[in-house]
Image (cartoon, rainbow, N blue to C red; front, side):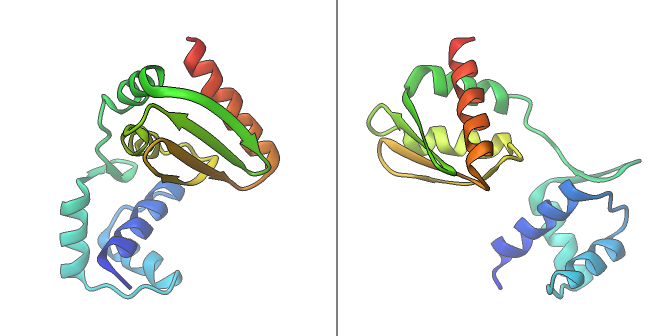
Length: 144
């Protein structure tokens, strides 16, 4: 298991439930099959930019991420197509990666993942209905 995978699982756990201590986080990770020492968790939490709030640990949100995605999408997105549980986005050449990263930063819960090439982004959703909803959301963003 890589550090990147472990840190991804930490973020996933924090989005799913309130975790207030490192001990709770260690137990939650163990439930999903990941063993981590207190030192490792401290380092991961520092690298991920986690802050402790009254509701538990949270990731400091970048205030500009929404603006960045909407700005990049309106600037470079050329086509949105729905294909079963997937959506294909066409961008101007050389811009798919930056648009995909900005979309990933949005952390839309209905998106399972994205893959970007030079001018194409593949968005994967859990099912056809969810993909259609994401397509509509993207089109509304472009209209606004």
